[in-house]
Length: 74
Image (cartoon, rainbow, N blue to C red; front, side, top):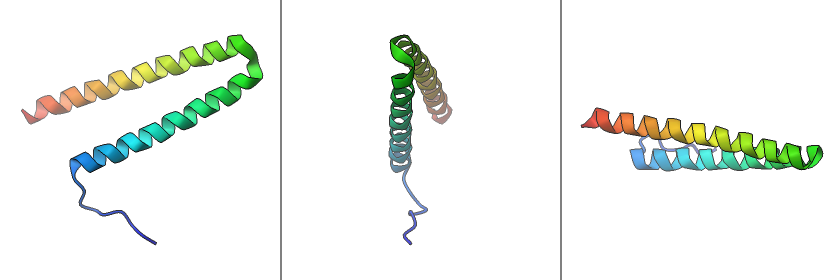
């Protein structure tokens, strides 16, 4: 079995985190589409709206965290 290196740069850690986030977003999108297929057009639009709002909140939290981390290093 191969293990990941322990000493990685912050850039590499950020890219791995981004990859994990993208994979989670794809999984959530597929799940949303699968659920929407059974509940019709109105349900699809509602799920799309909810998914957009959740994504907005997550992005806002990420930006806030990055800004706060950037100010801590100055």
